Image (tube, rainbow, N blue to C red; front, side):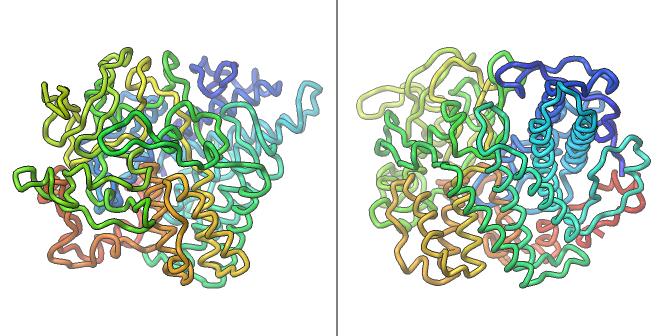
Length: 628
């Protein structure tokens, strides 16, 4: 296995200068270990420096949703690492994903070689920090705060576990490294560790973290005990899923119903502790807030504000990565990726697919609305009942729809190309990019320039509605695990473990998430049977967590790819058409996924190929079955 400087990391660490937000400061020069690891401040610098690089493994996870059925990615983007580019720069520009032209629902198992390597870089950073901190504890120096150092070790183990969960979720058995490595030859001789042996190591690390981290922290970027418990619950939930639903592509893995039951039960216990033991609440108490009707945007629901920098520091974000914003060189680019040209000249790389619109339920009935109809304006689509082009079709729907996406005649706040000034309300109307003097209700507008929308919808989620920051100057804290996610994972664990005594509480957790969409509680028919309750949980995961990077992992661990799209050898495939019922071109020449695809195509989605570049360096690395 070829692991370069990003893995070896030698005897140096990138240090981050001290200030209120320690993770958000520019890098200093590297220092040798002989001049370092002397004070608690040194320890904090080292940990923050490691996290500052690790966050780029996760902060663009929204692209991974394009492997599912609800998010479309257009064009080629981030083509991997240039030969003259160092690892840190590559990570900051998102190169861990190897080339987003592969991000569609099938055929992606060959990609992500860079992600594999950079994950090991992150692991070795964590190991380097843990090694240094443990040696500090042995010194018994008066300047060292032992309790704080143990908390830092716990946090480093938490991040190491997070990275390993990513690795095993994609590649299955992978080499397990829990100590600092000094020579590449050490790494290049390692064999793959069975997943059944890795999971207990992660649970042990998270047990340590939960015991050493404080119950809460007021310092931006520092993790607390609920983060460790939530991640431990997630590790158990994934382990339970693989044992319940199987993982036939992972050679040697033998699923066990007994193991699944035990892991679901342990996961439920950790999630319930997060929910009940720390006084945590959803953003703004989970209230829906106010929401304008179709075509207006003066009042947007609380779910919209949850994904703006104003929400930073709220208790719903349990495990997150923070960004500094303007002038820091460590900003997020969510608006650049999600917004169109009319908003700070952003690029609109991601759009909601048509299928997403039909997932938003009625605020009146609490159930699904009549399906939207794809049709052109020439065919009467502007006025036809249930037409995707008729704004009236979107009235009285889950408030999260308004906060997440724009359909025809929806307005959004425009921002100048430099991000500094407001340009007023801009209506989105598919296929009318930047059309001047477009009349709506007697007023003239220049329409939204989407930057290449191919689906008929654009995102509102993550897009700032105020000027002052350019498209790449964001300071939103990217959430990896939110409290709403914990509510839904808890419900899933209770449901599959058949924990009858907790069923009512699990239903209540799902209803808490639904309340932020202004939806009625689930009726009894949707919670009585296991399959029906699972469908309700799945529904909430779709609309609550859209474009946060969860969907592809969910449908793979549930073995649902064939059910979500179509069975193997289906002659029609799964159609990906826009609101005008035209094929969405780009990745698939005819706008169809999985058409006449063999079982092998599906297998190559459920597990990823061990990068050949790694196998060329390490003969001990075997290849996953579908890629032999």
